[in-house]
Image (cartoon, rainbow, N blue to C red):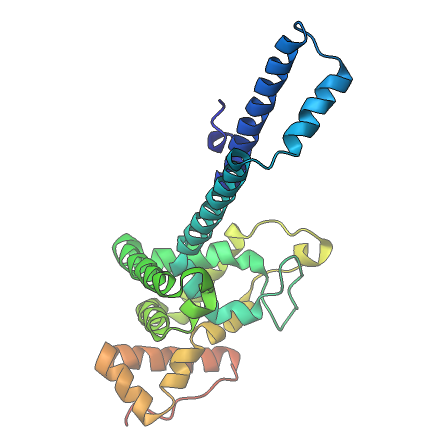
Length: 279
């Protein structure tokens, strides 16, 4: 039999093909047996009668086959669902802060107010490069473990919102962004670098509106504003600043505060402004 998965069918369609082949083999056996009973040949009416009889069977063997086949299909569906949930959890989490700026699938970006989904490959590539392979693997492992724990607890009721709203996921994203912020001490240079990466990785637009959309300085400010908004909100209160210092240290918090000021100066970003680094 052809290796269905190697032909690109995937586990679900492959299992359906396997069940179909079993059924076809059973029908072939019935036709061969009926043919022997009639001297080695069957006309179309006789063949139809054999097939119709097979379709109407309700014996224990047939019922068991259908039940077993259905349970196997459910098992495949569950495994595919779980595997899908395990794929790229880190990337899902780091793109989450800017998800509200992305249009619905197959919809164009809103110029000046949103970002195209075509920025995602370049954005993730830039995050990967700023983290480096060692840190990236550590964060990916943390995300996979978080998803595994939530999937185990939720079972078939698992939803990605369970991951997004789990406090651990925000801690992971904050840890990533605190590290990333260190790369933006020279904001103009790093801005140009990020713009170049995102532009170079953007796929072609599907329509005229998308082909006319580009990623520039204004889009960079939108991206950075949304990306760091949770950290800015956290540092807007004395209690939040203290929590940040306790986890990341004073220097890291000063780097973040300087980045927020630089973003405000270069783009007049309307976000919560810090009121100092002290409590």
